[in-house]
Amino acid sequence: MNRPQEPWRASPKARSRLPLFLLVGISTGALIALLAWRFPDALKEHDSWAHLIYLLGFLVLIASGAFHRGLRARQTVQHALIWIGIAGIAVLGYAYRFELNSIKNRVLGELIPGAGIQVAGGEVQFRANTNGSFIIETLVNDIPVRFLVDTGASDVVLSPRDAKRIGLNLDQLDFSRRYQTANGIIKGAPIKLGTIRVGTIVIPNVAGSVNGAPLNDSLLGMSFLERLTSYRVENGTLILRQ
Image (cartoon, rainbow, N blue to C red):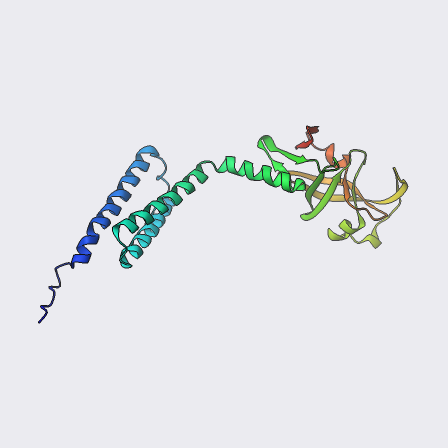
């Protein structure tokens, strides 16, 4: 007859797991002590402690799941190394977040020239497209509008399509202004745009007009550009600064 196991005595399997629990506990404590010594001000804020407790709880959950499934010590160590590697990548990503964000902006600027690249000092850069022109994605009165930069245009010129998109009623506009263009005289309706936003650049009360004929792209003219501190072209890159 099998003798019932005494309730206060741990089973051999549980005793074999005890060193692993101790290893996890000692390693976690050593890591916290190291971080507290290396970054003494990191845990002074309440939010920092909350994040630390959350991460420790997550690690305990992962570890307990591994032990519950009865993983062998070698498998447990392998899994622990994988999680340590993931944590290391996360730490590196946080440490180099500004550099990575700059790389992300550069890649997006190359893939989507109109999106622009936000750089230090409040500048926004745009790469020229294959035609050598500059396309800029903006927010006009908080509505996305795509512009072709045109230093030869005195005003910001909206196509009728874009004018409707930002809520203008074309029937109520006065198309009495005459503009001299490469294609001849074109009539336009003078308007005032609340804001034009390009990245972190925000210019209020911009003089503009709605073109009387269809346009492929609205034109970002001098009534916007001359409100900037500077704008210049260097090596195929348009640089705007407010």
